[in-house]
Structures are given as C-alpha cells and as structure tokens.
Amino acid sequence: MREVEISKEPVELFKLLKFEGMASSGGEAKFFIAEGNVLVNGEVETRKRKKIISGDVVELGEEKIQVRLKK
Image (cartoon, rainbow, N blue to C red):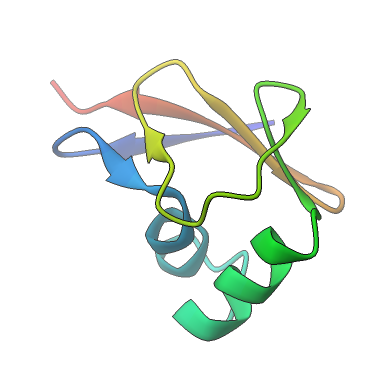
C-alpha cells in the first residue's frame, strides 16, 4: 500500500483516482466507481463524489492507497 498526501480535505473520490493515476481521466474514474470496482475502507463505494479524508484507504484493482493530510 502506498501513502498519498493531500493538501486539504475532503477530496472527492473520482478526483483522487484521477490525480493519483489510478484512472487516466475523470470520466474513467467515474466509470470505475459506477461499476463497483472501487473500495473505500474495504467496502464497495458507488458515489463518485464521496468525500475522502485522512486515514481512508482506497482500492482499485491491485492498487491500494492510504490518504494522509499533508502537514
């Protein structure tokens, strides 16, 4: 699992996937979320604008990231 620092929270799920390179575009990120391919804290998340905060774990396929607020 890799750690990802965000400068402010919350951040919307689809934006996080796009900015971290887990999806090549916002549209692709929204598609992955709508298809039920994204887990947040171990549970399927289908809300593309789900607010992600420090401590959340996001998974897409083999990739797993933990979000942390930049100090």
